[in-house]
Image (cartoon, rainbow, N blue to C red):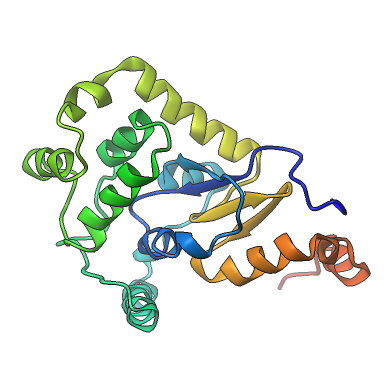
Length: 213
């Protein structure tokens, strides 16, 4: 890693159900100047694999998460409007983005439909409106293709193989950077890749488990 170059294509993995994925993509002009592959995955698939409990099932965490997303949006000057209910089924939106093959404009439009316009993409009416909003009038046909479904499945399987546990996540220089607030760390490591090879970073990265009560 000392040469600062990725050993594998840099990825940005996301799910439209995540407001923090939306906020991070809205800061795309601040990302490191490398061609990240925009990769849609199912957050629920990660939860199932790793045995995690969705945060929205914990009442006070749910409230804090929504408040913090709004706070971050206001601090960043990013328009933000929650969809009418959360969680919602993001499958159709993920399939539409998969069919778009990582197109930035389409991905951004889908996020904005949900988190700027405050719309639900899971209903028949909502998805039809989303397809028009994103400029993909044949979206229903595209998401029904077996190859589209298979590609989204492959995305999820590859994410698990890479150890992805949440979204949004950058995979850069074979390392994972999770969360909207990890952008400064991504930028720092892009400029100073040897930091991840420092003695203390290596020590805490292999810290043993202690005893739990």
